Length: 217
Image 1 (cartoon, rainbow, N blue to C red):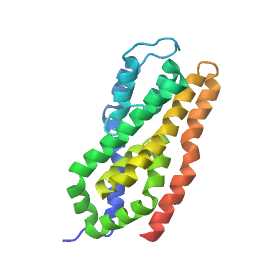
Image 2 (spheres, helix red, strand yellow):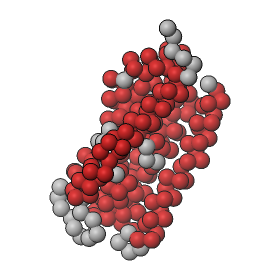
Image 3 (cartoon, one colour):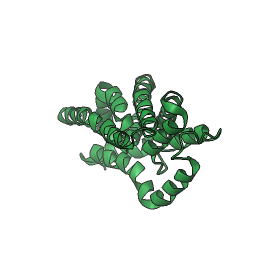
Image 4 (cartoon, rainbow, N blue to C red):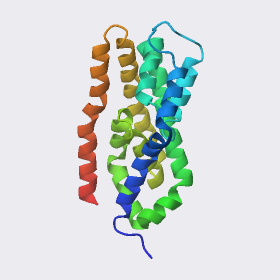
């Protein structure tokens, strides 16, 4: 029995659920634990383990309910936008690396059963055309950043296309949220507005790419 024509859309629903389900199951408790690991409120509360902890939390964001934007802002608050931005960007990059690698290694058979060979091939062709921009644009958007990386792994997006896009998306997003955290020391209101604007400004790009991909399928 061949997979239904709706298989590719079922696969898209699956990759969106991957980061959402952990939040529904253990989100509040894990967020409270995370808040205790990263000191906040004091720009000079620098402890040597906060940087590595922040990077590890971000790296696990694809499969654990980590408040990524809060963690990146906390790194900026503690270390400033330069060092904090480097740490946040590294964590974002590792998160995409983990999601892509795990889904590519262990999820391909499941994706094949859901979408079928033809459906998976259409998704692969769409990623060849729009995948790099999609990956880069969604690194600052919660849920979509994890979903896009999982989709790239499941559909078999080429590493030489995926990793440069992941890096190009992780750097500005990491530095932007670190700058938000650093700004909060002087102006909390501005920091709140910036944290809203960063993901919102990327949505038109994501919407346009999804619309074009859907028109081609």
